[in-house]
Length: 137
Image (cartoon, rainbow, N blue to C red; front, side, top):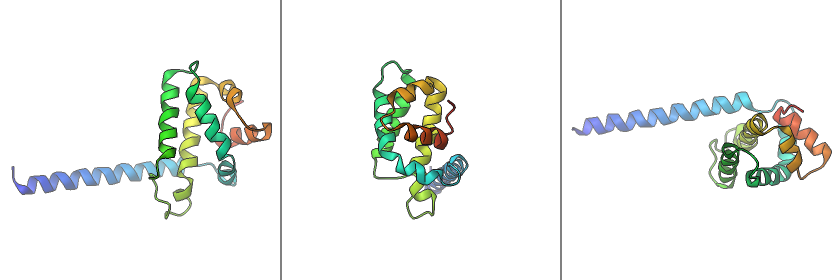
């Protein structure tokens, strides 16, 4: 194999990674909460983090749900973001958007009652969470 092959392979892999990253950014843009909901989501962050931890520890929930929640908590703990902070709007919002998408999946699999049972905040906070994440009551 020649050196040209390895360069072509490296360039192909790099191009594929860039395309995957761009696809992820497009998905984040489409899935983001609309209007003032994004700032509301950031305000609820402490309660949402406690909710995620409680849901991930609940053995009555399906295993797949708990695994997704554990992976989300690990992602949120990492100092590296999928979308760098210097990108306007999405740079700071990617964590909230990804959390919203995962919460929607949790409600689809486990039900809104499981989320409500583990919610650590106020009733108003839960109402805001359902609006932000588009959860059905």
